[in-house]
Length: 391
Ligand SMILES: [Zn+2]
Image (cartoon, rainbow, N blue to C red; front, side):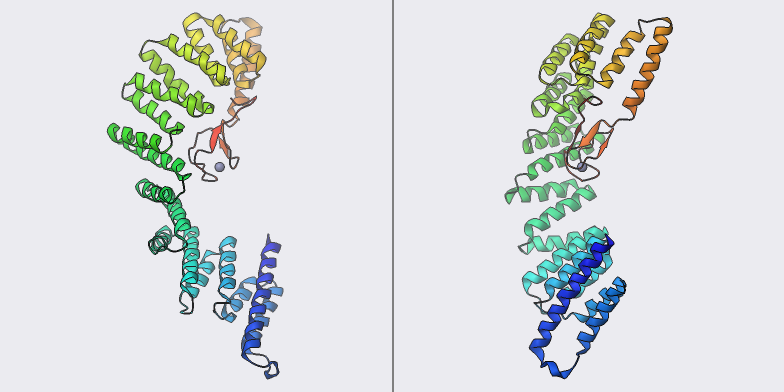
Protein backbone atom coordinates (compact mmCIF):
# COMPACT_ATOMS: atom_id res chain seq x y z
CA UNK A 1 0.00 0.00 0.00
CA UNK A 2 2.80 2.37 0.96
CA UNK A 3 4.59 1.58 -2.32
CA UNK A 4 1.41 2.36 -4.20
CA UNK A 5 1.07 5.73 -2.47
CA UNK A 6 4.72 6.65 -3.09
CA UNK A 7 4.32 5.51 -6.70
CA UNK A 8 1.24 7.70 -7.12
CA UNK A 9 3.02 10.67 -5.62
CA UNK A 10 6.02 10.18 -7.87
CA UNK A 11 3.71 10.01 -10.86
CA UNK A 12 2.09 13.24 -9.74
CA UNK A 13 5.51 14.81 -9.30
CA UNK A 14 6.33 13.93 -12.90
CA UNK A 15 3.02 15.37 -14.10
CA UNK A 16 3.62 18.56 -12.13
CA UNK A 17 7.12 18.72 -13.55
CA UNK A 18 5.73 18.44 -17.06
CA UNK A 19 3.27 21.27 -16.44
CA UNK A 20 5.98 23.46 -14.95
CA UNK A 21 8.26 22.73 -17.88
CA UNK A 22 5.48 23.61 -20.31
CA UNK A 23 4.78 26.86 -18.48
CA UNK A 24 8.45 27.76 -18.38
CA UNK A 25 8.91 27.09 -22.09
CA UNK A 26 6.07 29.49 -22.82
CA UNK A 27 7.34 32.18 -20.49
CA UNK A 28 11.00 32.77 -21.27
CA UNK A 29 14.18 31.54 -22.91
CA UNK A 30 16.09 28.76 -21.18
CA UNK A 31 19.37 30.69 -20.69
CA UNK A 32 17.92 32.94 -17.95
CA UNK A 33 18.67 30.34 -15.23
CA UNK A 34 16.57 28.40 -12.73
CA UNK A 35 13.26 29.98 -11.78
CA UNK A 36 12.29 29.93 -8.04
CA UNK A 37 9.28 27.76 -8.94
CA UNK A 38 11.50 25.18 -10.61
CA UNK A 39 13.83 25.20 -7.58
CA UNK A 40 10.83 24.55 -5.34
CA UNK A 41 9.77 21.72 -7.60
CA UNK A 42 13.15 20.00 -7.26
CA UNK A 43 13.05 20.59 -3.51
CA UNK A 44 9.70 18.74 -3.45
CA UNK A 45 11.08 15.93 -5.57
CA UNK A 46 14.06 15.55 -3.22
CA UNK A 47 11.76 15.41 -0.19
CA UNK A 48 9.69 12.76 -1.91
CA UNK A 49 12.75 10.67 -2.69
CA UNK A 50 13.83 11.06 0.96
CA UNK A 51 10.49 9.46 1.91
CA UNK A 52 9.19 12.76 3.34
CA UNK A 53 5.84 12.62 1.55
CA UNK A 54 4.01 15.16 3.67
CA UNK A 55 6.62 17.88 3.24
CA UNK A 56 6.89 17.04 -0.46
CA UNK A 57 3.16 17.48 -1.01
CA UNK A 58 3.22 20.85 0.78
CA UNK A 59 5.96 22.03 -1.58
CA UNK A 60 4.14 20.78 -4.68
CA UNK A 61 0.92 22.50 -3.65
CA UNK A 62 2.86 25.74 -3.16
CA UNK A 63 4.68 25.31 -6.46
CA UNK A 64 1.93 24.52 -8.90
CA UNK A 65 0.28 27.57 -10.35
CA UNK A 66 -3.46 27.17 -10.76
CA UNK A 67 -4.48 27.65 -14.36
CA UNK A 68 -6.87 25.79 -16.68
CA UNK A 69 -4.03 23.35 -17.54
CA UNK A 70 -3.19 22.40 -13.97
CA UNK A 71 -6.66 22.14 -12.38
CA UNK A 72 -6.90 18.46 -13.28
CA UNK A 73 -3.57 17.77 -11.55
CA UNK A 74 -4.87 19.47 -8.41
CA UNK A 75 -8.05 17.41 -8.61
CA UNK A 76 -6.02 14.19 -8.86
CA UNK A 77 -4.01 15.27 -5.82
CA UNK A 78 -7.19 16.04 -3.87
CA UNK A 79 -8.72 12.70 -4.77
CA UNK A 80 -5.48 10.90 -3.83
CA UNK A 81 -5.45 12.54 -0.40
CA UNK A 82 -9.10 11.65 0.17
CA UNK A 83 -8.43 8.02 -0.76
CA UNK A 84 -5.48 7.96 1.64
CA UNK A 85 -7.84 9.15 4.38
CA UNK A 86 -6.16 12.56 4.58
CA UNK A 87 -9.44 14.40 4.17
CA UNK A 88 -8.21 17.64 5.74
CA UNK A 89 -5.59 17.99 3.00
CA UNK A 90 -8.11 17.14 0.27
CA UNK A 91 -10.46 19.80 1.66
CA UNK A 92 -7.62 22.34 1.71
CA UNK A 93 -6.71 21.66 -1.91
CA UNK A 94 -10.30 21.94 -3.09
CA UNK A 95 -11.02 25.08 -1.03
CA UNK A 96 -7.81 26.61 -2.34
CA UNK A 97 -8.87 25.84 -5.92
CA UNK A 98 -12.32 27.34 -5.41
CA UNK A 99 -10.76 30.61 -4.25
CA UNK A 100 -9.07 31.06 -7.64
CA UNK A 101 -10.94 33.36 -10.03
CA UNK A 102 -9.52 31.71 -13.16
CA UNK A 103 -11.71 28.57 -13.04
CA UNK A 104 -14.39 28.02 -15.65
CA UNK A 105 -17.96 27.31 -14.44
CA UNK A 106 -17.58 23.60 -15.23
CA UNK A 107 -14.27 23.43 -13.32
CA UNK A 108 -15.85 25.24 -10.37
CA UNK A 109 -18.66 22.69 -10.27
CA UNK A 110 -16.18 19.82 -10.50
CA UNK A 111 -14.21 21.19 -7.55
CA UNK A 112 -17.39 21.81 -5.53
CA UNK A 113 -18.54 18.25 -6.19
CA UNK A 114 -15.14 16.93 -5.05
CA UNK A 115 -15.29 19.14 -1.96
CA UNK A 116 -18.73 17.71 -1.13
CA UNK A 117 -17.21 14.21 -1.37
CA UNK A 118 -14.43 15.30 1.03
CA UNK A 119 -17.00 16.58 3.53
CA UNK A 120 -18.98 13.38 3.18
CA UNK A 121 -15.88 11.32 3.92
CA UNK A 122 -15.06 13.58 6.88
CA UNK A 123 -18.58 13.05 8.27
CA UNK A 124 -19.43 16.74 7.76
CA UNK A 125 -22.81 15.85 6.29
CA UNK A 126 -24.39 19.32 6.63
CA UNK A 127 -21.65 20.95 4.57
CA UNK A 128 -21.74 18.21 1.94
CA UNK A 129 -25.53 18.49 1.73
CA UNK A 130 -25.40 22.27 1.24
CA UNK A 131 -23.00 22.06 -1.74
CA UNK A 132 -24.83 19.12 -3.34
CA UNK A 133 -28.20 20.89 -3.08
CA UNK A 134 -26.66 23.91 -4.83
CA UNK A 135 -25.27 21.70 -7.61
CA UNK A 136 -28.74 20.19 -8.09
CA UNK A 137 -30.57 23.53 -8.25
CA UNK A 138 -27.96 25.02 -10.59
CA UNK A 139 -28.73 22.25 -13.06
CA UNK A 140 -25.03 21.42 -13.43
CA UNK A 141 -23.64 18.27 -15.08
CA UNK A 142 -23.39 16.91 -11.55
CA UNK A 143 -27.17 16.82 -10.92
CA UNK A 144 -27.56 13.03 -11.00
CA UNK A 145 -24.39 12.27 -9.04
CA UNK A 146 -25.26 14.99 -6.51
CA UNK A 147 -28.74 13.53 -6.04
CA UNK A 148 -27.24 10.08 -5.49
CA UNK A 149 -24.83 11.43 -2.88
CA UNK A 150 -27.67 13.36 -1.22
CA UNK A 151 -29.58 10.09 -1.04
CA UNK A 152 -26.65 8.42 0.73
CA UNK A 153 -26.56 11.33 3.22
CA UNK A 154 -30.28 11.00 3.98
CA UNK A 155 -29.82 7.24 4.43
CA UNK A 156 -27.00 7.87 6.92
CA UNK A 157 -29.11 10.43 8.76
CA UNK A 158 -32.19 8.19 8.53
CA UNK A 159 -34.07 11.20 7.13
CA UNK A 160 -36.59 9.07 5.30
CA UNK A 161 -38.88 11.93 4.19
CA UNK A 162 -36.01 13.60 2.38
CA UNK A 163 -34.77 10.25 1.06
CA UNK A 164 -38.22 9.59 -0.46
CA UNK A 165 -38.32 13.05 -2.01
CA UNK A 166 -34.81 12.68 -3.52
CA UNK A 167 -35.46 9.13 -4.72
CA UNK A 168 -38.62 10.30 -6.49
CA UNK A 169 -36.63 13.03 -8.29
CA UNK A 170 -34.10 10.39 -9.40
CA UNK A 171 -36.88 8.09 -10.62
CA UNK A 172 -38.31 11.05 -12.56
CA UNK A 173 -34.89 11.48 -14.18
CA UNK A 174 -34.92 7.91 -15.47
CA UNK A 175 -33.25 6.09 -12.55
CA UNK A 176 -35.93 3.39 -12.32
CA UNK A 177 -33.72 1.10 -10.21
CA UNK A 178 -34.15 3.53 -7.30
CA UNK A 179 -37.77 2.31 -6.90
CA UNK A 180 -36.37 -0.68 -5.07
CA UNK A 181 -34.69 1.56 -2.47
CA UNK A 182 -37.76 3.79 -2.33
CA UNK A 183 -39.78 0.79 -1.10
CA UNK A 184 -37.25 0.30 1.72
CA UNK A 185 -37.58 3.96 2.75
CA UNK A 186 -41.36 3.56 3.00
CA UNK A 187 -40.82 0.40 5.06
CA UNK A 188 -38.55 2.36 7.41
CA UNK A 189 -41.29 4.99 7.76
CA UNK A 190 -43.91 2.29 8.35
CA UNK A 191 -41.82 0.75 11.14
CA UNK A 192 -41.40 4.16 12.75
CA UNK A 193 -45.17 4.79 12.65
CA UNK A 194 -45.88 1.33 14.03
CA UNK A 195 -43.53 1.99 16.94
CA UNK A 196 -45.58 5.12 17.66
CA UNK A 197 -48.74 2.93 17.52
CA UNK A 198 -49.94 4.77 14.43
CA UNK A 199 -51.34 1.81 12.49
CA UNK A 200 -53.11 4.05 9.94
CA UNK A 201 -49.84 5.69 8.83
CA UNK A 202 -47.99 2.37 9.03
CA UNK A 203 -50.51 0.78 6.64
CA UNK A 204 -50.36 3.80 4.32
CA UNK A 205 -46.56 3.62 4.06
CA UNK A 206 -46.59 -0.12 3.39
CA UNK A 207 -49.10 0.42 0.60
CA UNK A 208 -46.71 3.00 -0.91
CA UNK A 209 -43.79 0.57 -0.48
CA UNK A 210 -45.65 -2.08 -2.47
CA UNK A 211 -46.61 0.49 -5.10
CA UNK A 212 -42.93 1.43 -5.47
CA UNK A 213 -41.83 -2.20 -5.60
CA UNK A 214 -44.50 -4.89 -5.79
CA UNK A 215 -41.77 -7.47 -5.08
CA UNK A 216 -40.96 -5.93 -1.68
CA UNK A 217 -40.67 -8.92 0.67
CA UNK A 218 -39.94 -6.57 3.51
CA UNK A 219 -43.27 -4.72 3.02
CA UNK A 220 -45.20 -8.02 3.02
CA UNK A 221 -43.44 -9.29 6.15
CA UNK A 222 -44.12 -6.00 7.95
CA UNK A 223 -47.73 -5.98 6.80
CA UNK A 224 -48.10 -9.53 8.15
CA UNK A 225 -46.67 -8.51 11.52
CA UNK A 226 -48.68 -5.28 11.83
CA UNK A 227 -51.96 -6.96 10.88
CA UNK A 228 -51.25 -9.82 13.28
CA UNK A 229 -50.62 -7.29 16.08
CA UNK A 230 -53.88 -5.57 15.14
CA UNK A 231 -55.72 -8.91 15.43
CA UNK A 232 -56.48 -8.97 11.67
CA UNK A 233 -55.34 -12.56 11.20
CA UNK A 234 -56.80 -13.14 7.73
CA UNK A 235 -55.08 -10.01 6.42
CA UNK A 236 -51.85 -11.11 8.12
CA UNK A 237 -52.05 -14.50 6.37
CA UNK A 238 -52.78 -12.83 3.00
CA UNK A 239 -49.69 -10.61 3.31
CA UNK A 240 -47.40 -13.39 4.53
CA UNK A 241 -48.49 -15.79 1.80
CA UNK A 242 -47.59 -13.15 -0.78
CA UNK A 243 -43.88 -13.59 0.09
CA UNK A 244 -43.82 -16.97 -1.68
CA UNK A 245 -44.48 -15.21 -5.01
CA UNK A 246 -42.10 -12.33 -4.29
CA UNK A 247 -39.01 -14.28 -3.26
CA UNK A 248 -39.43 -17.85 -2.06
CA UNK A 249 -36.07 -17.75 -0.24
CA UNK A 250 -37.82 -15.63 2.39
CA UNK A 251 -40.80 -17.94 2.92
CA UNK A 252 -39.21 -19.44 6.09
CA UNK A 253 -39.43 -15.90 7.59
CA UNK A 254 -43.22 -16.05 7.40
CA UNK A 255 -43.74 -19.34 9.26
CA UNK A 256 -43.86 -18.25 12.91
CA UNK A 257 -46.57 -15.66 12.33
CA UNK A 258 -48.47 -17.82 9.86
CA UNK A 259 -48.64 -20.59 12.46
CA UNK A 260 -49.94 -18.18 15.12
CA UNK A 261 -52.43 -16.57 12.69
CA UNK A 262 -53.89 -19.93 11.63
CA UNK A 263 -54.03 -20.95 15.30
CA UNK A 264 -55.91 -17.75 16.13
CA UNK A 265 -58.42 -18.59 13.37
CA UNK A 266 -58.50 -22.21 14.57
CA UNK A 267 -57.40 -23.45 11.14
CA UNK A 268 -54.21 -25.44 11.80
CA UNK A 269 -54.97 -27.84 8.94
CA UNK A 270 -54.95 -24.92 6.48
CA UNK A 271 -51.47 -24.14 7.74
CA UNK A 272 -50.32 -27.73 7.15
CA UNK A 273 -51.79 -27.62 3.64
CA UNK A 274 -49.88 -24.42 2.93
CA UNK A 275 -46.63 -25.89 4.27
CA UNK A 276 -46.96 -28.83 1.87
CA UNK A 277 -47.51 -26.36 -1.01
CA UNK A 278 -44.43 -24.42 0.04
CA UNK A 279 -42.31 -27.55 0.30
CA UNK A 280 -43.15 -28.60 -3.24
CA UNK A 281 -41.67 -25.37 -4.56
CA UNK A 282 -39.02 -24.61 -1.99
CA UNK A 283 -37.59 -27.53 0.00
CA UNK A 284 -36.06 -25.52 2.84
CA UNK A 285 -35.31 -27.13 6.21
CA UNK A 286 -37.23 -24.44 8.18
CA UNK A 287 -40.39 -25.40 6.30
CA UNK A 288 -39.82 -29.13 6.95
CA UNK A 289 -39.20 -28.47 10.64
CA UNK A 290 -42.35 -26.29 10.86
CA UNK A 291 -44.36 -29.04 9.16
CA UNK A 292 -43.01 -31.85 11.35
CA UNK A 293 -43.56 -29.73 14.50
CA UNK A 294 -47.16 -29.08 13.49
CA UNK A 295 -47.79 -32.73 12.65
CA UNK A 296 -46.22 -33.73 15.97
CA UNK A 297 -48.53 -31.30 17.79
CA UNK A 298 -51.68 -32.49 15.97
CA UNK A 299 -50.99 -36.15 15.30
CA UNK A 300 -48.11 -37.29 17.48
CA UNK A 301 -44.31 -37.85 17.50
CA UNK A 302 -44.30 -40.61 14.91
CA UNK A 303 -45.95 -38.53 12.14
CA UNK A 304 -43.69 -35.58 12.87
CA UNK A 305 -40.49 -37.66 12.85
CA UNK A 306 -41.52 -39.51 9.67
CA UNK A 307 -41.83 -36.35 7.54
CA UNK A 308 -38.52 -35.06 8.87
CA UNK A 309 -36.54 -38.27 8.35
CA UNK A 310 -37.91 -38.70 4.80
CA UNK A 311 -36.74 -35.20 3.93
CA UNK A 312 -33.31 -35.73 5.52
CA UNK A 313 -32.71 -38.81 3.40
CA UNK A 314 -32.92 -36.57 0.33
CA UNK A 315 -31.35 -33.39 1.74
CA UNK A 316 -28.98 -33.70 4.71
CA UNK A 317 -29.21 -30.79 7.14
CA UNK A 318 -27.63 -30.18 10.55
CA UNK A 319 -30.69 -28.31 11.77
CA UNK A 320 -32.94 -31.14 10.58
CA UNK A 321 -30.77 -33.74 12.31
CA UNK A 322 -30.87 -31.70 15.51
CA UNK A 323 -34.67 -31.67 15.47
CA UNK A 324 -34.88 -35.38 14.60
CA UNK A 325 -32.73 -36.21 17.65
CA UNK A 326 -35.13 -34.10 19.68
CA UNK A 327 -38.07 -36.25 18.51
CA UNK A 328 -36.28 -39.48 19.46
CA UNK A 329 -34.99 -38.17 22.78
CA UNK A 330 -38.59 -37.90 23.99
CA UNK A 331 -39.14 -41.59 23.24
CA UNK A 332 -35.86 -43.15 24.34
CA UNK A 333 -34.60 -44.39 27.72
CA UNK A 334 -31.29 -45.38 29.37
CA UNK A 335 -27.82 -45.16 27.74
CA UNK A 336 -29.32 -44.60 24.25
CA UNK A 337 -30.99 -41.43 25.55
CA UNK A 338 -27.68 -40.25 27.03
CA UNK A 339 -25.89 -40.83 23.73
CA UNK A 340 -28.59 -38.99 21.82
CA UNK A 341 -28.32 -36.07 24.25
CA UNK A 342 -24.57 -36.00 23.61
CA UNK A 343 -25.15 -35.98 19.88
CA UNK A 344 -27.71 -33.21 20.22
CA UNK A 345 -25.30 -31.07 22.24
CA UNK A 346 -22.88 -31.45 19.35
CA UNK A 347 -25.42 -30.44 16.67
CA UNK A 348 -26.53 -27.56 18.91
CA UNK A 349 -22.95 -26.30 19.00
CA UNK A 350 -22.71 -26.54 15.20
CA UNK A 351 -25.91 -24.56 14.71
CA UNK A 352 -24.97 -22.03 17.36
CA UNK A 353 -21.71 -21.10 15.64
CA UNK A 354 -23.16 -20.68 12.18
CA UNK A 355 -24.50 -17.51 10.56
CA UNK A 356 -28.02 -17.68 9.15
CA UNK A 357 -27.91 -14.80 6.70
CA UNK A 358 -25.34 -13.59 4.21
CA UNK A 359 -24.99 -10.54 1.98
CA UNK A 360 -24.90 -11.54 -1.71
CA UNK A 361 -22.93 -8.41 -2.54
CA UNK A 362 -20.11 -8.38 0.03
CA UNK A 363 -20.29 -11.67 1.95
CA UNK A 364 -21.13 -10.08 5.31
CA UNK A 365 -22.90 -12.69 7.44
CA UNK A 366 -24.61 -13.00 10.77
CA UNK A 367 -27.64 -14.22 12.67
CA UNK A 368 -29.82 -11.15 12.06
CA UNK A 369 -31.65 -10.26 8.85
CA UNK A 370 -30.51 -6.75 7.86
CA UNK A 371 -32.40 -5.05 5.04
CA UNK A 372 -29.59 -2.52 4.73
CA UNK A 373 -26.26 -4.38 4.76
CA UNK A 374 -24.13 -2.87 7.58
CA UNK A 375 -20.98 -3.62 5.61
CA UNK A 376 -21.56 -2.63 1.95
CA UNK A 377 -24.75 -0.57 2.60
CA UNK A 378 -26.62 -2.51 -0.11
CA UNK A 379 -30.42 -2.65 0.22
CA UNK A 380 -32.04 -6.09 0.20
CA UNK A 381 -28.73 -7.85 -0.47
CA UNK A 382 -28.76 -9.98 2.72
CA UNK A 383 -30.51 -13.35 2.26
CA UNK A 384 -30.91 -16.67 4.14
CA UNK A 385 -27.99 -19.11 3.71
CA UNK A 386 -28.72 -22.47 2.05
CA UNK A 387 -26.87 -25.79 2.18
CA UNK A 388 -25.93 -28.44 4.74
CA UNK A 389 -25.68 -26.00 7.64
CA UNK A 390 -28.28 -23.46 6.43
CA UNK A 391 -31.72 -23.64 4.83
ZN1 LIG B 1 -23.10 -6.32 1.97
